Length: 121
Image 1 (spheres, one colour):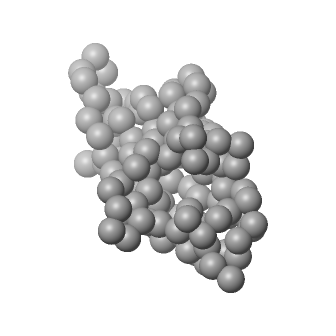
Image 2 (cartoon, rainbow, N blue to C red):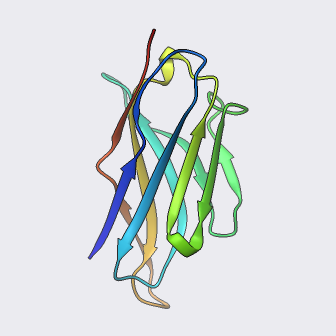
């Protein structure tokens, strides 16, 4: 089985910073891309940032220049550093890992349970 667990959410004032972590554990061969998504109340879940196993990154336009995604392959962990936070960044943030459970087999997506980020004064 594979577990994906996020941590680091909380309440922060506008303009502040917050860091999220997401660790994958269990029995698997490797992890390809890791993503951060978010879902605000009444809105669809949206992709925030992606990082490949090799470190290539992409970001949603709304967070470019403010958020930074990184990963530690040895720890099977992905991070999201969020700076200059705005009230509209308030959402539940989810991590998704594309996991290869057995070598030479295809990947499957595993999601974390989500962590709440609230930006408010």
